[in-house]
Structure formats: C-alpha cells, structure tokens
Image (cartoon, rainbow over all chains, first blue to last red; front, side, top):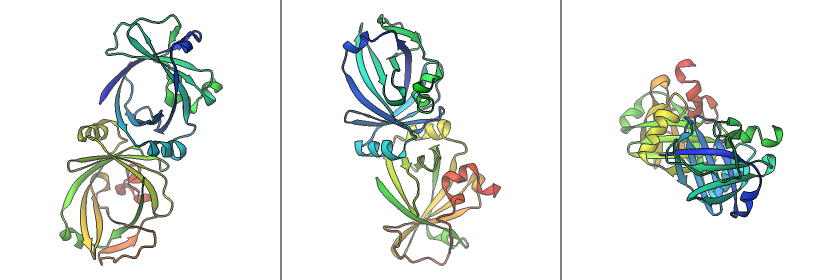
Length: 154
Length: 154
C-alpha cells in the first residue's frame, strides 16, 4: 500500500494550458463506493487497476496493480459503471513540484482541476498564480462523484 | 480474460469429506454488484484479485490478478464488504474431473456446495453419487449473495 496525500484546486484561468502537453486519460469504476473504490485507468499505453480506501483528511490508502491494456479496455467498454470519465491530463512542473491539471471532457466539460501530491499533509509548496480555491475536501470534485453528478448538472 | 463455465450442486451427505483434504479459503468483495464483481481471495499463501462480469447461463467472464498476500489481508480485514466469507475447500478428483467442494463456515455454516468447471456448457461429465440437486442458476448460492443473505437466515 502507498498512502496518497493530495490537495486539489480549481484554476483561475487557462494560463496553465501553455505550460505542458496533455495526454488522454480514460477511467471508470468497478466500485465507486467511497469505502472501497476500484478504479480502472488507461493513460497512453499503460493500464492500471487501483484500489482506494476511505479518505481521512487529504490522506487515503491506495494500491495499484498494472493490468494488460486489453483487460482495462474491456472493463471500460463493458463492465464499469456508466459513464466513463475522460479527461486530458497535463503535467506541469512549478518550483520543483509537479502539478497534474485535469481538463475534463464529456458531461464534465468545462471543469479543470489541479492536483499536487505531497509527502505529508502539512508540507509547504509554492502555488502558481493560476491556481484558485482549494477543493480537496469538496466531495463534488471526487472523480467517483463526477460519475453520478457530472459538472454539467451542477 | 478467461471464460468461466461452472456448474454447481448441493451434496446429499458427507461421503465427499473422506475423499480429499480441505484448505482454508477467505474471500471478500470490493464489489458484490453482479454486473462487476471484484473479489479478494486468500487460499494458503496465494492471494488473488478477481474481476467477474455478469453471468450468461453458466458462463461468466473472469479476469484474475495475483496480488501480494499483505494487500489481500488488508483488503479482507478493513476494506471489503462485511462479512467476509470463510470456507474450507476440498478438491476431489472423480473420473478425471476435479470437483471443488466448499464447506462454508461462520453465518453460512451447514452449507456445502460442489462445483465443477467445464470447457463448454454442454460438456458431459460423470457425477459422483454424493452429488445432489443442481443450483447453478439459483442466485441464493452465489458467493456474493451469501454475503448479504447468509445460509443461516434462509
């Protein structure tokens, strides 16, 4: 198990877009229950099955297993809960830390979320000036919630 | 993906018990939804994460991933839906075919189910005389159902 400590922010404008190149990411859920999330993700040629426990603060247990691309495609196409989430992920380095900026597509088009992974909950980090309000604890922005309550319905 | 074709039977008495030795098997579910089952299983020193699609007749898509024993123990102890299923599994060879006889414990104590895995739905096979009625299509006997409606409550 690894422990995932992430903080999540909205962006104030699209200056981030010129700072990195986006890769298409497709993900879906075999379980979107917050107590035992099972996520399927394809990013480029890599496919991953990820199990996540319940979040405590910004911290969550996470277990990742690489799986064959064909299995993941089959899960996304025919097993996972509908709809599938599709987004473009940009990786942007700012003062030595990597920000993952997700530009959502489909029913969540218009939503952009920036995440930073930390070593500890109180770790200091520099914020680019295109970073807006923090939404780490706002359940509406959980990917597993965006499935049932996409951004377009807010 | 492999395709799992299994037929499931009750037993008429306990003659099967002297024909093999049982190994303890613990299993739980990260998803018990019949459309997308995610099962965690520990048998001896082996641990497996298994994804299953919906059954069509006696046939079901199944994908298996070996995972570290410690991960599986953590899933069973703290992530999986309650309760966990514990059973003793006996493997008994009869006329060249292997029967898996599961003797359930805990809330399902008293239930014994014998399964045979086939290559095709219409494959012929010999039945030992301790095999009783077929329950392949009886959803009450699905392991994922025994979780919510254990044998002791029938």
